[in-house]
Amino acid sequence: MPMHKIIYLLLFVLSVAACKSPEARRPVQRISGSFIKESAERNKELYQQEEAIITELIAQNPETDFETSPNGFWYFYNKKDTLSSTMPKKGDVVTFTYDVKNLEGTTIVSEAENGLQQYQVDESNQELISGIKDGIKLMKEGETVTFIFPSYKAFGYYGIVEKLATNTPIQSTVTLQSIEITQEN
Image 1 (tube, rainbow, N blue to C red):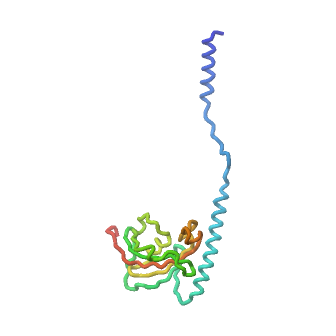
Image 2 (tube, rainbow, N blue to C red):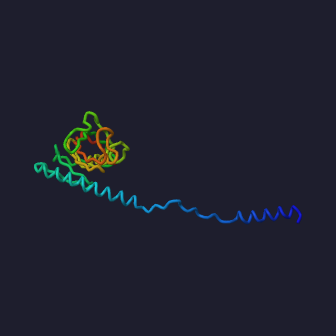
Image 3 (cartoon, one colour):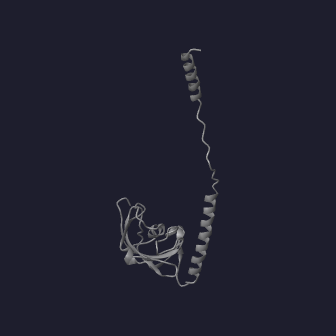
């Protein structure tokens, strides 16, 4: 057989082999999703434990009129405005002060350390815990409210380095200084 026929035959065989459709690669490991299910169960148990602690704290203070938020936290008014009806809405800029305490009342981060805060409601990437972002929307200008947040509404898994352990419920007293209503509202 002449050399050029062998080369053509070899090229033909290689081109036919190269036309084979690619096969899907199979995963080396298969994940069953059990990690997510286990994590969800741990979080439910943690919330139930925290809720029991908070409920006990509320029961120990029958003179305080606690309210429950649909967002998963509790609060009471230190100073309530019964005349105004203006509450912050999306886009409004609010000025406020707040502190962070453990459930025993020990200050973790003082109002002075936090300073005067400004926050554009539901439009700012400001590093506030979700509980305070939700709580501010329940307040009127000049009011002071103490919120009790389960850990998932507070600092959750991260805590505050060298100040607050992970998964710790907190209380925070917030004073809403002013509401600057935007033209959108």
